[in-house]
Length: 282
Ligand code: NVA
Image (cartoon, rainbow, N blue to C red; front, side):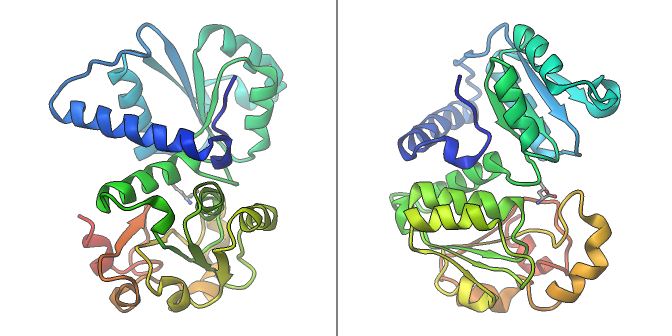
């Protein structure tokens, strides 16, 4: 059974295949054609132990359009919060569902579901990573820069070394594009993830100065200063981020003239990004 628990679970070739299939399905969808019913008659579970808007809707619509049914399981309405071993749910869910999408806190929960279950486990965000978001962000870059190889796309990350940053680092390790992250001291991404990516791709760099990271970038990306589960640290974090780790027009001017800005949303306007830069996306 194959899983997508961390970005590096896919090979470079597989990722390019996903992009080709996505482009084809997206083009069909734009014509109102839903030919590919790969999930016809199948149930796909979706567990949300954290809030979700876009990830939930995109998965649920995707599953429906591929002919399947999304079984949405929220923490408060299931038995998950009653402290039973994850193996008990994993085994039974595997007998009904064809795959399981999960958004939760610890990534180890996904590893346990994969260990005790027998269906593909898909990471819809954990404290450690957000691989589906990064996969789709890179697909967007591929769409925005047609004909350009992914390896040439210089990427910049500004801000917290969070779950998004970790998955960007893994992606750079697998796909080989240059990535410079500017994170405040004390808010670095996962050291093991960084070291592993750097051994595969020497152009993965961690700096402190956002201007250094943004210089010549094709895509500038950021995220909130406190991700879900860290909201209580907001005030403390502001001291390290405020006024410096913000993507504004001046920072975008350092990037390549064709550069795009990306944000996984929700955004805190005026904190990590200005309204002007964010609205340039709309
Ligand atoms: N980094 C964010 C992503 C939200 C989609 C978080 O985990 O809060």
